[in-house]
Image (cartoon, rainbow, N blue to C red; front, side, top):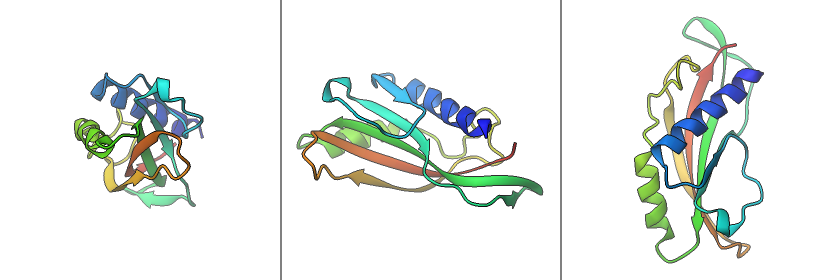
Length: 131
């Protein structure tokens, strides 16, 4: 199980290197965010299933996510797009922790339905690994 922690930490370090303008990148699920801490990102797994076979080895696969947060304003989507363009993750094996390179699984903007003052863009990837 600790390999998932290693993967999240490696992804967070990669995102922080690609986006030094972020105040922080956390290897965890999104939690309480204060607007004065923005911009920031979270790197986390969204779900997991039973082990699959990958590259002739028993392994696990799950969606791996990067959520980037900025202050909500009329150009927030453009700001998020510019940040996301700097994060080059496709094909990355996170220092050999993954059996295959990351593959894109889509993205979505977060809606600020509760008036939090936050705008977000979530990048989804497929990750496969083995203990």
